Length: 240
Picture 1 (cartoon, rainbow, N blue to C red):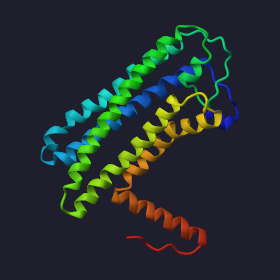
Picture 2 (picture 1 turned 180 degrees about the horizontal axis):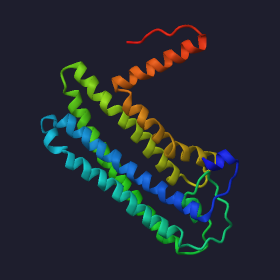
Picture 3 (picture 1 turned 120 degrees about the vertical axis):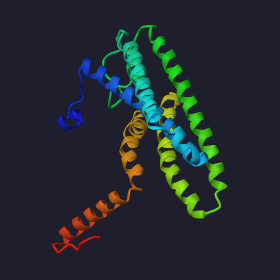
Picture 4 (picture 1 turned 90 degrees about the vertical axis):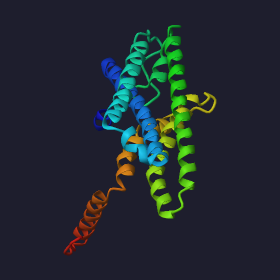
């Protein structure tokens, strides 16, 4: 954001390390939180009578702590491995922020294989999370289709589809970005994929998850009406 405001394309070494640290921590925590949210929806729909005893406050705190703990541990190992490598291929990153694969391209040491192995390990753990989410939603959709009332099915789908949409955008773009063969890779395509998985999910998360909130819908409707009539310079009607 600072580079965009001041029209510069440089970042300090410490700033780059900090950016990698925070980016990996938030990405990892986001992935685990999305996985735990799938479990929450599974319990709410497939085992509604046991929801209060399974998803207690202590359970929610434990899952949140596990997500952030995994994020911090992962980012400490990633950052330490990446920035312990000697960089001898210049200092120009083909990306709009400091990203580990782009930094590894600047290394001339075989030690980068440590980081590659750790990336593979993280990919396997991410694949396990995706498999868990898929299995959860298979059970959820089977339970929803057995609901006799259409209103009940609609309520269940409205609770699950926003989460599933964020998971799909987040996981598909990040997997495509890291598994894309170099033959079809380009600077523009890399930039597009990075924006999709690093910027879009955090932006749409609060919008998607709060659109079912009646108070927020009412406040947004009031704001839009107020802006419309202020543009027309006519008295604004009272919204109830």
